[in-house]
Length: 240
Ligand SMILES: Cc1cc2nc3c(=O)[nH]c(=O)nc-3n(C[C@H](O)[C@H](O)[C@H](O)COP(=O)(O)O)c2cc1C
Image 1 (cartoon, rainbow, N blue to C red):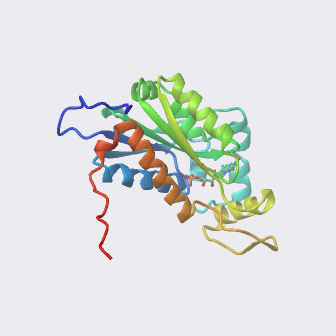
Image 2: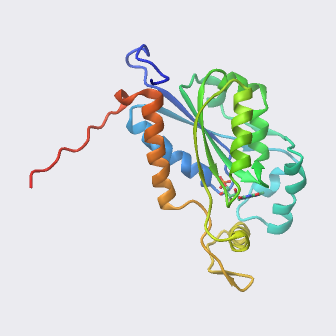
Image 3: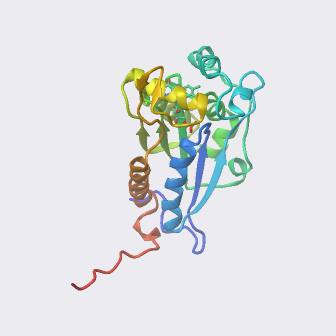
């Protein structure tokens, strides 16, 4: 049974919120792909990027590429390990809407939820947004998705959200090469073939992963809004 039932007033399309923190744009890209699918099905889609404003940490994330990749990147390890929160700014969409589905985009930082998203999910605003609302989690990372996903789910459920599904993406290469590829990208803003003399794969979300996101989102839309939200008919079969 769909979560959003037929008694939704006519002319009031289902409301979807894309909530995320994104430094290099990967979570944003994944949620945009999901948003396209919801829009095609007649939903009204709103974006709520979280801004990281904490004076201790935000400066390093205010520019891309990072100025000094190793200190900037490693410098988040202690705070992340202690699951610290910091200062953030959220757009009005977080406070003003009444949503039928909240899609949460969560990049992994040191194996867990990034400080900005954790801060939001532990805030009073999060209860106002999530209480009794369906949510789905979209995790992007180099490799370590599970702890991030579990933590986002738990935090959102603690605020009254109703978990409806997840999708997660990692990037190619073993431990060493995927790390070199990530740090090379964070430090140069470019995709290079080599780092420290080793061949490295491409980091970040691929086209195939965006396709996977679209398929996942279509199924999610069916489950949450029912198939009646589809606005585009399947193409007729052409006679041969
Ligand atoms: C500070 C920092 C820490 C990270 N730590 C991890 C990690 O522990 N495990 C992992 O798989 N990826 C890690 N990553 C990689 C990110 O999850 C990955 O680059 C993701 O695409 C970032 O998403 P965004 O572009 O939406 O910010 C880290 C990235 C940053 C910037």
